Image 1 (cartoon, rainbow, N blue to C red):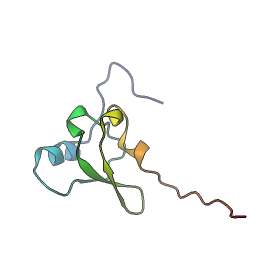
Image 2: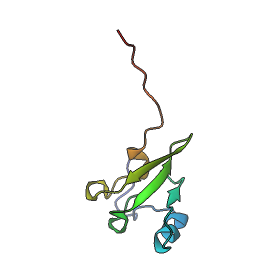
Image 3: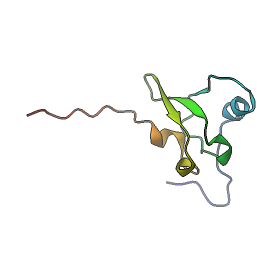
Image 4: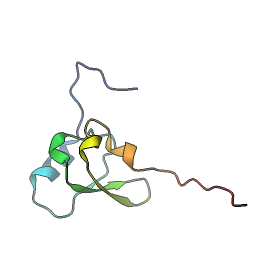
Length: 80
């Protein structure tokens, strides 16, 4: 279910302060945050429940949630 149109897109406060800093390490546990155009080109480490996964934010990702691009489950297929 998506967020209502009359509400603004959600972004975690700690993630906003992380963008304003000039840190090389940009780590977040906030998978529910929306990707803003300001984030394009950044490399983020996003938590998937077990470890951190590195992702580079591309222009096509704007408007989506961070958690959409980091799978939380490892799918195992049976080999023949």
